[in-house]
Image (tube, rainbow, N blue to C red; front, side):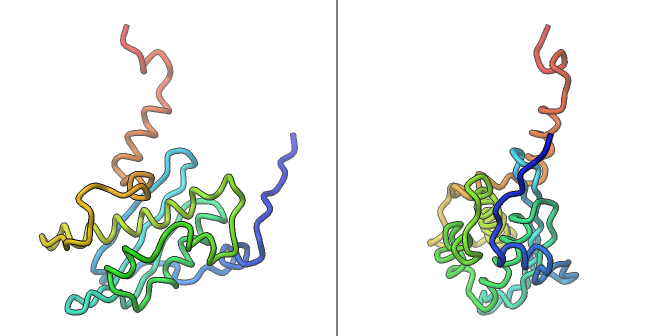
Length: 171
């Protein structure tokens, strides 16, 4: 059985082969891990935030996933540097991320959603940790956040899927 490679554009392939801002930030202000149980992709975003201005001074990521996952995570870190948390929350969308990398095959659009969801989870976590959610942040999780499950939720979902059928249903 042969697999047909996905038609990734040259920008996606370049960011996959040479990702920008790959790695940890040891003194990150906030760290968020998110994943997608449908494909198994995981992203960890590390953000260094100026606490007075709420500007993202540095952004890095680690990823376990496909070329689209790595490319979208990479481009997100480039797009958000120098922006305030509010600007990132309101201006960075999965559509803009997908456009910025020159598009994705239809079956890989979820990678852009995951990257933005992980980013929004990081911003929400920052404000939750500081106990002062701003008025511009909705109380309910956004579509992207709901798609980007937290590490614990992802592990639970995946373990349920991996259980043998006889263990899933009660006798």
